[in-house]
Length: 250
Image (cartoon, helix red, strand yellow):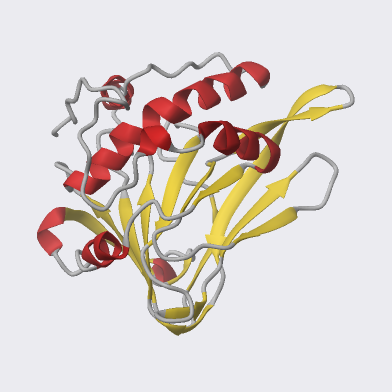
């Protein structure tokens, strides 16, 4: 198994064609929206050419480790494929650039929720922790939806070591390539009904969101809320999404 070995910080990661400058994003806004809603949209993270190039990778068997047909497992309808190591340049670049920016938020959340786990500053160190625990399979993936396909509400938990934030990037254009297929989050607070959040995305937009739970300040202190995400039914066309998960799988 190849472990990504990169000693660069977020500021030092070489620019990747078609990827916005991650260090220059408004991280104060992103952090505030994650704290308030459990998700934050990043408009125009990838340009159209890069989106179409990534979507075009889907038929290439040699770069993926597995293919999952959702209907066979009760996950919904549609399918997705997990990349193999070594990851494509853009996918590895996204992991390397976003992880150090999200780590302070992840550590702050864990501290607020009374969770002892803290995450190292560099992504290769965290991946080494995953691999030591037997989580050696890469988790970034491409998802493909056709008419009437959807993704049931779920959480991407693949083992003991879970990074609490992840990234999804819409590679197709609503209204041109497909209709329907909205990205949806639900949040379950104790003794309350679930709160839904429909996240509007255009081609190249990204959403950062909580994988499992997040802290919320209540009248009696901080408590955990549980989050799930999914995709509503596609009404026409075809939709591709890139998912960037920072922990590996067993």
